[in-house]
Structures are given as structure tokens and as C-alpha cells.
Picture (cartoon, one colour):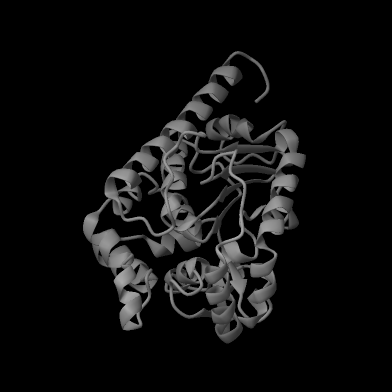
Length: 309
């Protein structure tokens, strides 16, 4: 298997014993995950939904990964551009009342149950791996072994996506407390490789030209104070996150043909973590869908011409 685009063979034959293990890795970034939501829907529409041995999600990417695992990535685009869902989930003024800016409990325990039902039992039955950061140790943690019933899935989604300060206190799963997975591992490449994955398809929410930068001093101070109080083990990963992002990119670059990354183009619109601009989010969905569709179509054309993909 020369690279992840041999998924085209898997689409025809199912999951063969080909000596390879292929994972889909979905990046988050709050509302910026609209890009990876569109990309996931495109892969699903290309018939690649059942071609992965594992599906990893980090932060808001875990939401998209769960929908993809359930075979509902296309349906999952709708909540991102639903006015009531976005206003109920992201509301900065709640912070003034002591509430979370990002209400993940509302999203996964109300919206995903009553408005846009997610089949949690189907997610659990699939190869879903939500990533979170252990609040006590700062370790990047695959929550999959901690999920024992469909009722555990919503809590895992919250744990994977709980941004410091903005989304409330750490979330408990199986007696341990977790915060946003992107703090320890912005893209779950390390976890996937450590688990024996040999090939990766990575859905990114930043263009290739993006360079991670330190936040403004006041933001850094507020987050550090919050972490020392609520998640002391994560102070180190927060401090080192820019360096960790660089290490992650180096690992991905070193994989060569064993990784296929889909990214927004350089001229894609900028989407903030807490954006609720439905026009902007809808554009990001379309851009992500188009990028993944184009890449998959090009790969299929090469494959049908007889070349290895």
C-alpha cells in the first residue's frame, strides 16, 4: 500500500488484510472545524466512509469524527449553519454571568439528542477515537478505552472539546478529568502512529502557510491562571504548544507518501474559534468540501489510469 489514497482499493474490496492500518485524523479548532466538517462529508460522499481502521478526532474535530464514524458526515454539516444551534452553543455574553462561552453540554446533550440526533450506539460500535488532555498529567489521551456504553460518547465529545476558560471546567470520564485534546496534541498523529497506524488521511483546518503564534500576553495570563486552578498538569503543554505544533508538522512531513493531508487553500476565509457568522461558516463548509472532493477526484483519476495511489 503506497499511500492512503489506496483507500480507493478498500472502497471496492472492503477492509482487506493488506498489512496496512489506515486512520482518518480530524483536526479541530472550534468553529474553524467547519473546514474539516466539509472535508469529512466529501470523503463520505466519495464512498470512503468504511475504509478506515481508526478515526481520530481532536477538539471540535472529534464532533466531525463521530458523525463520520456514524456514516452521517453530510447530515452533520447542517448544525454548523443552524442559527439556533450556533447561538445556543457559542455566546460570549454568558461569561459575564459566570457561564461558558462555549456550551458543549447544550450541544452534545440537547442538540445531538433532540435536534440533530447522533446515533451514539453507532459511534461506539465504530473505530472512533476521541482525544483529550488529562487535566492532572497533561498527557494526550485516547478516550476510546474508557467508553463502555453509548451514554459515554457525549461525555467523551465534551471532554475532547473543552477549551480552557471558554468551555467550563474539565470533564470527568471514567473517574479522570480532561480538557481539550488539542492542548497536548493538536493533530493526533502521535497517538495514531503509537497505536500501529501505518497510513494517515488528515483533515486540517489551517492552510499550509499558517504559522502557529503565541497568544497575546493577557490571554496567556488568563489561561495559565485557569489551568493552574483547574488543570495543573496542562500548564506545561500550554506553554509548549507552539513547539509541539512544529514537531507535529515535522512528523507529518517525514511520513512522505504515507500521509495525505487535505487543507484549506491559502485564500480561504479566516474563521475564529468562536465565530457564529453563518455566512462565513457556510463558506468554510463549502471550501472544505470542495478541497476534499477535488483531491479525491484527482486521486481516483490517477488510480484509474493504472498508477499507484
